[in-house]
Length: 160
Image (cartoon, rainbow, N blue to C red):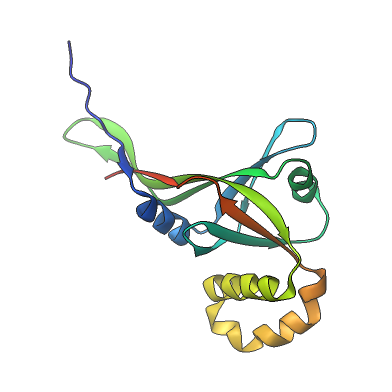
């Protein structure tokens, strides 16, 4: 019987969180009111080991999904390198990936909304933080913030 080589390495929660931090976007998957799946890439930011945020308009398909069922799945890939291994004559892909499960909720508290938006802006537009307060004063009331609280530790996998 041939011995199978394990090509995927399971990683701890801290490593998985780093994948989320490095990923250019995170796919958030949810369930539509009719039970069908719905997933989309979003600009998600992590506050701590179990809290993520994203912002959106106050209406649309993701809002309908989350009002119906707040359970979500997060997935991210921070490294993806297709490779042909000459020595093995093998096509493969090196990657770092992570997944997590959580529960989404709508943030109503203005202080928490501001904190979440500050984290998002610091991550994606850090050179423009001098304009943050002005933007918040204009748009905080019409911006929806979704908090995702993880319901179990994230899992990461990699192939060298």
